[in-house]
Image (cartoon, rainbow, N blue to C red; front, side, top):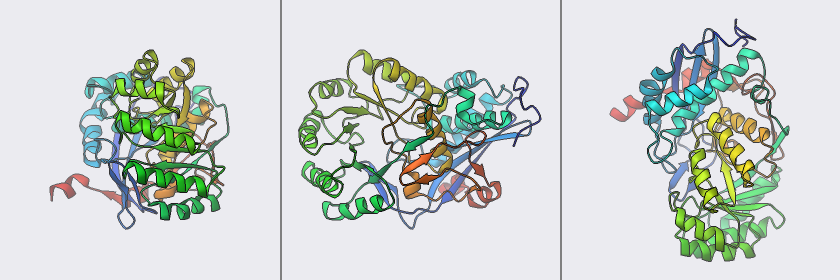
Amino acid sequence: MIGPNAGDLSGLTIDRVETFAVALPTLRSFGVSGGAVATVGTPSVRVLVKVSAEGVTGWGEATPIPAWTYETSESIVTTIERYLAPAVLGRPCWDLDGVSAAFDRAINRGFSIGAPLAKAAVDVALHDLLGRALGVPVGVLWGQRRQETVELGWMVSGQSAAEVADRVAEGRELGYRAVKVKIGLHDERADLDVVRSVREAAPDAPLWVDANQAYSASSALRMARRLAELDVHAFEQPLPANDVAGLRRLRQDSAVPVALDESLRHPSDLATFVRLDAVDIAIAKVQRSGGLTLSRRLCALAQDSGVSLMGSGLTDSDLGLAASLHLFAAFGVDTPVDLNGRQFVDSVYATGETVLVRDGVAQVPTGPGLGVEVDEQVVRELALDVLAQRAS
């Protein structure tokens, strides 16, 4: 929808922020080293955010994964409704930098960024709103779009070595060329067996592994030597996020390039790792970094610092998927990325033209804003009162 102020955003101010915790169908089970992320038979909850400004609306998404980080569906809803929304009501919707500063005053950063998933949902919704107000996609707002497609990786997680080949075959049949493997769910030997089975099932595939902070420095070094023998292209977040000394040592001695994800909540975190020469690859992840505003800063810093850039997501539904695609296309991330939401959740709220994925390649949306049309009636029908449910 193009609002009454199309072409002139100067007077368009935020007048409402709404949250909807929605239960989406889960297509496959999925786990990380911290625990389950999605379970077949149990709905996957996503918190959708609608921001309104004088008749123009935009949508964003938060993906609560307590097994990955501390934010829950309950905390995201209350953080937005009680802290972030009051901080931005009445502000110009174009002032993304001012909104980011207001967020930090409402929920301080602490050791790193505070409540990034909640902040990301509002920030992404504002980008969607701005694009819709002007009738242009997000990349046009930025004046930055270096590619029209983004290759996705097929996720393999939680299976034993005997089961992995079937999971890889499923992705290959759907046209996916690259594979990402979650490790750290078992001991080192079992993890290596899983990766070896994936490599045997996909001998020519770009392959990277993600430990989600599961290893110690010594075990990660042992794993890196073995992973190199299996032609693994990147070793993602092997150590705890704040183990800067361990990651520096690992980066110096690892036989596989070390990629950082959970360590890079804020662009200043990346600046620290760059100064210490402790990072090979920076992972861009919209929700982890509090939205598109800070993610753009992180990506620009990585490229200006000569650090390789890869992309990832949080099993996002289509709103989060689209936001990530706009970001990765803007910075020309031409390696396969981990945007695996389509594997695990069904975005039943999305109508009409949405993100097209064919043979493991996603088309960057070209519609206004994020380019995803949301059926608000479906959203309201799926909405849960997560605070009342927890209280009962």
